[in-house]
Length: 288
Length: 334
Image (cartoon, rainbow over all chains, first blue to last red; front, side):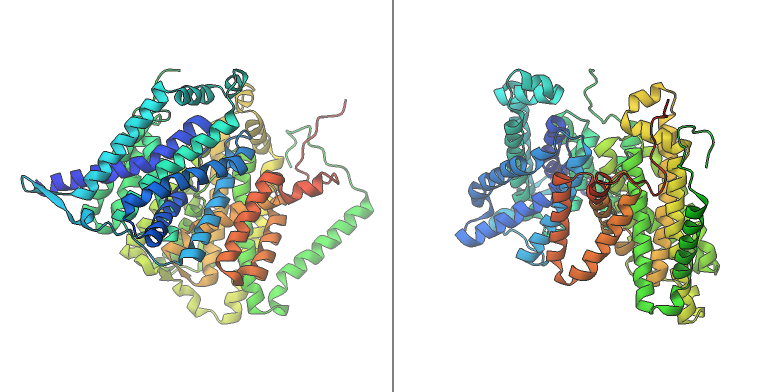
């Protein structure tokens, strides 16, 4: 029973991180109708950036976010302005192929600059502390990263529902031509969205890098987990992505209990089974 | 050729042209078949790669360019075909050349099974969803003791053949698969299925309204492409004598296919031919540069997508109107 609760708690907390991976993917799919194959590689890029900033400034991983998050926002803004905007209106498959090429370039640039060795972000005390609640031990770090994830989801949900940008995002998602007609500068707006997506990625990347060692080729797996969270949750539903991430995280940890090498396999399996049972996602918006 | 498609009338060639064509074709076949007698083992092994990678790229291009089914997990079929061949040949003691069609059959069956969840997704979701399936197969093979786990397994039956026979045999198999794939693609595109697919690609609702069974056409294409890919995968690993999970279920296969199709021209039959030539030309010249080679390759694909989305073949066909495979369709002249 105790191991069950520990595994469940661990899975939920891992899932909250996957959800944070998926949030950016969900936004770019929802607003720009494009899937970014380089999403996972950008997460790894964020982790390497954090590692470099930590080395240069001698700061901890959380402090280095002050530099990494704005830097990633800038990279996202430039990426959309210079590259992705050229293909974004051309059907959903051009961006897919373009970002596929970008993924290969990014992986190899990372390998050339940082070598193929694995790295991790040292968080010092934060990674070591833990609680003991009724015999169930929980790490402080996973708990912090879960709280951060919930906070970012809440903020994003509020931005979409109540802010000026959120209204623009929903308008562009529903009908880009009409949105343009009433004065939304969609090219510039897309750049802002991708900037925001990469800022979220930066936070997720730092939390990920503290938790797990990473290497230049770790990106594609992150993309798949993000993707599963988004599809499981249902499109156009931010909190759905959050629940989808939790489901994948829990499935992976229970799978790893069955056989240590099969954790990700069970995550994928649950994804396929859920797809067969509810192709529209667990929490799809049923309207329209 | 099917008579059902009335708008598909190839230009009748004069008798002299026809003899010339036949003569050239005969010379080409003789050069191709006779290669083991005049070329080194190294050349043969390179050509096996060329033919198998070409077949995978052609299948990817059929799916993406004609069926609107962009796939990122096509390597699942490479691995399934290779593992099916190795398992059948090793466990049953079967001649690997005779087991090759079974590798294709395994791919076709796997395509049918994977269509169950995958065809519930569409567009970019389908693309990434297939990647999830490929990744699952890799993890399964990696954890299966019966299939040799991480180290994979050798193709034992090949030990009884001498080196020349083995190399020539694998080369002939690869050449047959490559040329066969081209003929299959041509037959598909000239037939009813091709017409249905192109109408679906251009306007799915309109095609459905005209009575095209959209899902059935896509499923048929999915199975055909899977069969081609898994036979190619099986031959490719006959060439290396050893199959491993990380190599056979590797994204590199799909990456090469996508690169070739994008560079050559998506949605044309000539594109993959041109793309394969370019790909191997670049690889043989620059692969020594390691990571920089892949950075260049990826950048080239990005530049092509942005500047010339039709690929290299569009640069040719925009200047000269040629249709060497007779697969283009024109409105009937009144």
